[in-house]
Image 1: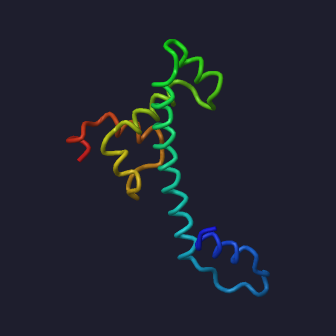
Image 2: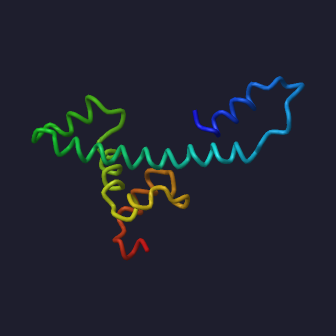
Image 3: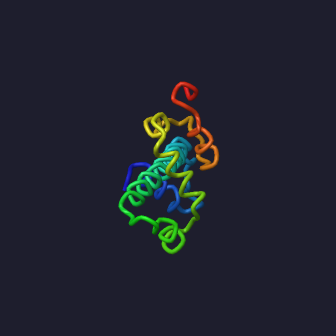
Length: 116
């Protein structure tokens, strides 16, 4: 358990009558950590999709998506485009990237020069 999670667990378990002023820095750290993890998860999902597509037998990719994934081909394509974009995948820990898949996919259409 991370220090942030331990701090938040302590805050959540305090009796309401004895609760100290909440440590908002701990909440901010936990929120920022979760947000960054979400961006990392989006990029990692795209990387796994790229690997799976390369391993998939010819002609079976769309069926794989339909039968085994919780999203469709359009979302899979967006996720792969995001993961395949050099600048986005290198900057994925940057706090300034949007979390929205559609916005990240739009950024992924930019060349590296346009992205800068």
